[in-house]
Length: 202
Length: 154
Image 1: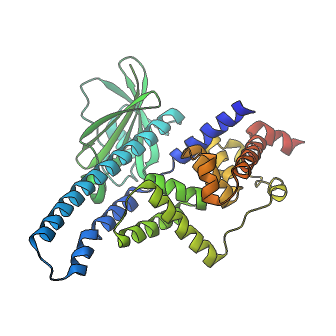
Image 2: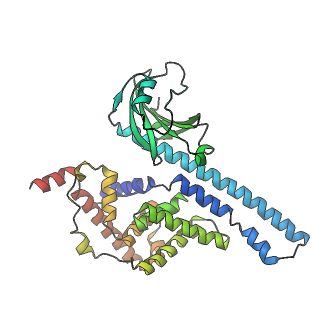
């Protein structure tokens, strides 16, 4: 009985762990927090009281607030990166069948013509990965390309490409590596396109 | 924030409602100037949820005997993976049952903390948790692909 509940608990944890607020909503909430700082309200309440101590306290509080918001933004960004990486890893593990089999990125870009960005060959080290094919999928609730690759050891790897909207472009990492579910997930961006590569841990 | 969203999701079992709840809670906290911590966020979310429930008369707890006999629709659920089945199964629990499960299993609340939150004796909380888990497991087991196929064939 207890063992079964343990498995059930793990399932519940996994289920809720996969539920994430959308990046847009997170950004909106962070902005909402920033736009309603308690210091502003405090100063309004005190009106014309501008003694040195009060000014110093207000400056100190503002600095703390700014540092706090910076930390909050970093935490939110880190969480978002983890969420994207989990989706990348999860989709990779599903190993869905490719809809378009090709070894040429131009052919694949043509086959996946409904994408809202230009699918491109990533700047991998030469011959590090061989293209096998691709299909449509979604990452972070937007249309994406799922691209099947094979590394030099013959292992299957999956690359995801999706358009980085204006609001998230700055928050998507230039290069970040995380380990999710025993996989290595790399996130980076090229020309406004978000890249996510899931590969086995060597 | 994401923990707050997951808590809200456990209450509403609906993405949009959960996001709305978190947004309202954040707005309420920001109007007060904080504090920005998880317990306070949870409390604010719960208060907003209860207010919404009072407005919409949504606070209903299904009796165990009725809910256990509720059936999932006969569609292509056979192909659902575990997360989909978990989603369906959790959807058959009441909001209060999901909240109790989430706080206990995901957030690690103790029975004492849950008894304070729900204003129920600790023993009641423990037996309720046990009953909810048993029911959830029963729903999940009956939605396993093999069993559903057998049920539909037999």
